[in-house]
Image 1 (cartoon, rainbow, N blue to C red):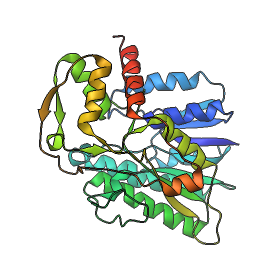
Image 2: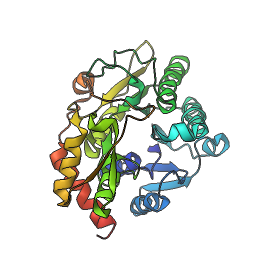
Image 3: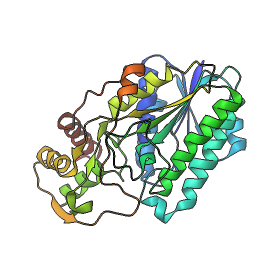
Image 4: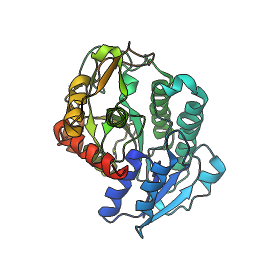
Length: 321
């Protein structure tokens, strides 16, 4: 049976689909190819996927319940990665987050409950659910009831909705709290891409909280390893078959160190534009991955010293620089 994967033309979805195809899976991809960022980048990812005979694609919006319900029921697992991403954009266009992360998430849960023999529903959550928590590293045992952005609120709501559906309809569901994912084919609104682009152009880079930021930067290959391990480990229990995991590098880095490695990889210094912390942002993230290690065998391998030069090399090649 196939795997249905939403957000297939997205950053994480693209890499996850490639990994699934490499191990011999059949993947049905769904994506609406929206214009939140450069659609050409999404189409370039998609073109690579369409070259594989075991991949098929349906352009549709997950919030369109009629379209989603029409998908061929030839899958027995769902990896739901489609979402409206971005903390800061949620201040500008909140409706997009409700449409995708609430309505769209509900549509996918409805699809899951109506799919006979579904083995596992794996979905993307976010480290943003930890909100303003000051205890680090962030543990899945921590309270997550004080989101500081609408994006975070929708992701936490998604976890609660999935728990409820797992409780009511008895299918295995697992949420994954991703921590600052970066790497080749990454999103243009993320730090690695923005910094690389502006440094090469000789333009200032916005460095928030006056540089006093830490992030648990996690390389895309490590995230994909965690997703596939999760897919293969549905929770079997007489209780509610739902759980969440942290997928992070478990080694927070100073933002200024991250920028320094980009500078070294480019051979060019950045022009720093230090700014206050932005509304909805948090000064530090750090993942406690003890449960992910124990249950999934998750073990991040790629440091930023290795990962950033790989991203920069991809960026130059993709942009023909």
